[in-house]
Each structure stands twice: as C-alpha cells, then as structure tokens.
Image (cartoon, rainbow, N blue to C red):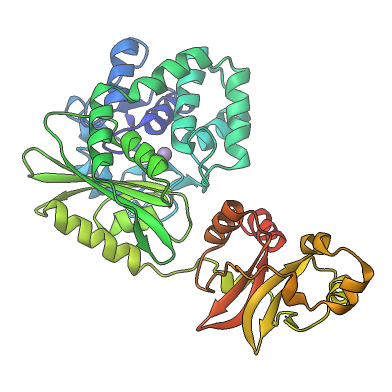
Length: 433
Ligand SMILES: [Mn+2]
C-alpha cells in the first residue's frame, strides 16, 4: 500500500497537493491529519464524496510500503506517522517548497522554492499529460493562490503563475474559488481584528516597524492568519505577529507575516518550534505566557542576522556640494557638468540647504544669476536620512515630501546622498529572487 499525507493544520496548498498525488500515484490512499484549517473543514464537508480522505487511525501503517509526503519536510509536522519513521524498508517520496530544515530522509524528492507545493505537482501533471477535472483544477488554484497571496507574496515565482495559467485552462472556476477563499474573514475574525487594533502599537526595530498582537481566544476560531495579515496591512508595518492564547492559556498559537527580507518569519517560527517561509509561518507553544512569547519574538527579530541592504550601501559618495556663498551661475554650471538635478549646500562644512533645478525658476534675470549666492535661492529646510535606514524608509520620506534626493547624515556630517533613481534601481534590480 502507498499513502500520501501532509502537515498538521492542513491548508489548501497541502490539501491540493494531496489530491494531486492521487492523480500522479494511482491507488495511493490519502491520509489527512486530524487537525486541519477550518476553511479546509468547510470545503471538505461540501466536497466529501469527491475526495476520499482517511484519518491516520483508519490505515494500517504496517501495510505501507511507500509514503508520499507533500508540503512539508519534517516528521514532527506529520500526524500519526511516528511508527513509520523507524522503518528501514519504507520508500519515501517528498514534494515540497520549504527549502530548509528537512529531517525526512526521502528516497526521491521534488523540491524547489516555488510559492506553493501544488506548483511542483502541476509541473509533473503537465509533463505526464494527466487529466485534471475542473473541480480539481479549482482546488489546486485555491492552494496556489492561498500560499502565494494571489501571486503577490515575494515567494511567488514565474512558475507559480504558469501553473495558475494552466489550471485556468483546465477550467478552474474563479467564482467557486472566490467563495472558498473569502469566508475566511467572518464575524469572529472581525471581532478579534477590531480588539487587536484597539491597542495596536507600531514597534520600531532596526529601522522598520513591526506589530505584535496578543489576544485570548475563547472557543475555536479559525483563519487567524487572515486576521494577522489584515492587522499587518492596516497597521502598515513591515511584519506582524499574532500571539493567541487558546484553551485557557494552555497553549499559544503564533502566526507571523512579513513583507521584508530582513525579518524571516520562517526562521523565527523555527526557533519557536514551528515552521514556515520567510513571508509567512506559525508555531504552537506550550508553557509560556503571551508576554513571554512576545519578548521572545522581539528578541528573535532584533537578533536576526541583518543581511538587508541599508542606505549606506546605496548612497553615492563623496557628494558634490557647493558652499553657500557660491553664485547661482556657477551652481548652474556644476549641475550641468555633473548631470545632476540638485545638490547639497554647505555652510562652513555643515549642511545648510539644498539647491535643485526647480529653484532656478525663482531667478529673474542674468544679473541675479551672476551676482546672487546660492543661499538666497536654496531651500534651507533639508530633510536628511541616516545611513542605517532601509531603502523603504527613504522612499516613504521622498513620497511624503515630494523630493527627489536625501542627503545622508551621520553624526552631523554629510556622508552621502541617495536619489530617487538610486532607489528605483535598487527596487527593480536587487529584490530577492
Ligand atoms: Mn505550502
């Protein structure tokens, strides 16, 4: 007998990959973990007859010759499979897009850093020209969209989009898909989100902001990940963590979402005993209070090795400057020669203002150009940035104040300059793959 299984707290990518395995491995028995996300529960209660799932205790694991694992690479995330771990004669196939921390010694593996595991399985189904029904295509696309945030997460790849196109060709039904993905945010989720927002706080850490929400949850509430995602968006923070105490505080569910590379949620969750990707992850913790978990997360965020690009890495230096007594005519010729649209003005070596091409509109005639010092036309209200800020923070300042360049100042010294085009180049060329 061969079985396919996936991780606990099964999500749509995991369920879709299990169903895909039944297409790729005819006769395989799908074994669903006992804990599944509530939207999966709702989906399965409607589609029960179509997907014949067993629970771990319904299969005789002694009969299993081949185990197919999808959407996870760790034994601890499987449900009821412990006895198989010791079996020497077991053949294991692994399909996954989590590229780190595998402890499953598979005979065969298909792994790649795609946005969803189902993408890897669609690749194989395409190759083998497998027949996919519209209902299966819909489920696969739900899994793909859920794991990639409708192809918007940084983890999404071109291959995910190709797979999505293929599933749409196979008649994936967007109407059904919407109805499956939407009810995730209901009355219960709304109430929790609102209570979280009441005492929401943007916490500055290492040049960006994070949000940490804590709540005690009574009864079962599913889709807390949706709540955390919305919390992050509304708070406008780079990363958000939700810490939910359930069962009268006997355990905590931690859910993280991040949109920047310097905060790797998967890494943080692995430190807490859970798992995930750089953009999304979760963990289950016992024996810690909400405040202890919060302190631990802050610690992990602060001590994460910072590999991210800072303004220091993007700025130009040395900076072409002029002294405040320089005549406007000469400033114009320097701007022409250097091809720049503006530059800082120094007064006794200290940053005193900034002059840009726009300021030349105020010059009325040739005489003024030749005889007026730049300090008469420069804007002396200068916004600056420090070299240890992030490119995103520079963008925020530029957009808010409609300016195209920011002098970089450290210890009261002008150390560089960063321009709108430096940032454009960075965002278009240097984002992580
Ligand atoms: Mn997945």
